[in-house]
Image (cartoon, rainbow, N blue to C red; front, side, top):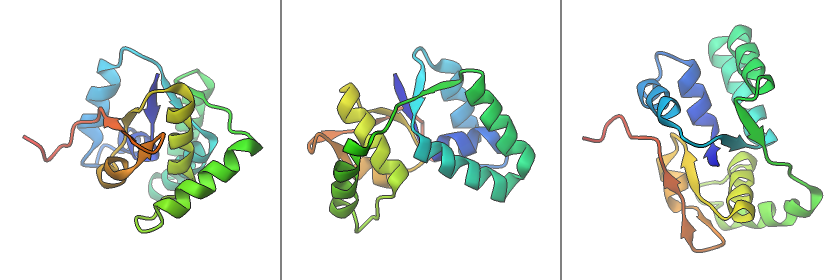
Length: 142
């Protein structure tokens, strides 16, 4: 499964986003299902609503309903690890959505991700030493 971050979903929904062509291409080339978390969905809905309006938010929720991705269940036992990660990466800083994706990588044993956040996911490590592999091509890279 491939982890999906907020920026990827926002770029998919917004044709004016500089990451939009890269996000569409990545989605078309996927050979594995997407997985994300409730904090990422919450953050995505907030940004879609504020930037693109209620229709964009509703289309996104409908895609989740249709099975466009699966959701990793976060539990109360994950809270101490997420807090520790947020403390460790506070200089960036790390938000709850990003911490939740680190949890998924640690539990699933894999750090392939689609994210527009190259700086943070370039710095984060899952299981304290393993880097993420961002599969979203940077539109500025040659």
